[in-house]
Amino acid sequence: MNITITGKEIKATDAIKEYIEKKAERLVKYFGDEIDANVTIKTEGSEQVAQMDVKIGTDRFRAVTAHKDLYASIDKDIDILEGQIRKMKTKKDKQNMTESIRGKEELRQEEEKEIEGEILKTLYYDIKPLTPEDAKLKLEEKPQDRFLTFINIETGKVNVIYKMKDNKNYGLVEPEA
Image 1 (cartoon, rainbow, N blue to C red):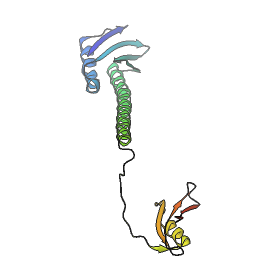
Image 2: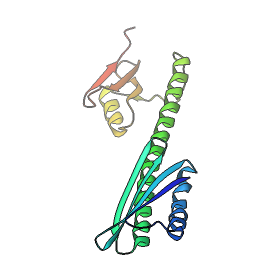
Image 3: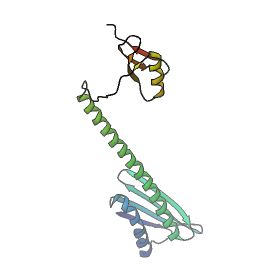
């Protein structure tokens, strides 16, 4: 960590420098030692002002506070910077996670393309003799199902009834021969 401390109208004593360096260690836990900080302390009227500009990689953060006690002003600046850094780090972590999930999804889609045209799943169930109207009612009972295969009582042939894309109407597949 690189810290430059400047005093304007106030002397940056060794005690103040040590205090700033000690408090700035709280920021190291987020990004390690790749932090550059410029700290300016000054007096404005009866208040002590601490301004901290922090650069971490390409990201910049700033906190400026004024208080009657310089140490309280430094503490407040560190709290503000820590909040800003934590927020940015959380945002970047979420972004990375989203990109990772997106990458996994693309990989899964590529794998699906590779096995395109193959039968991936087989369902077995009993085919019951029904009228097309009864088959429609049975399909309505199961909203998750898109189709139902049944033996048409009227023709004795295997039929398929399916829900149309509008989810209101139905189609019937009936063999000719």
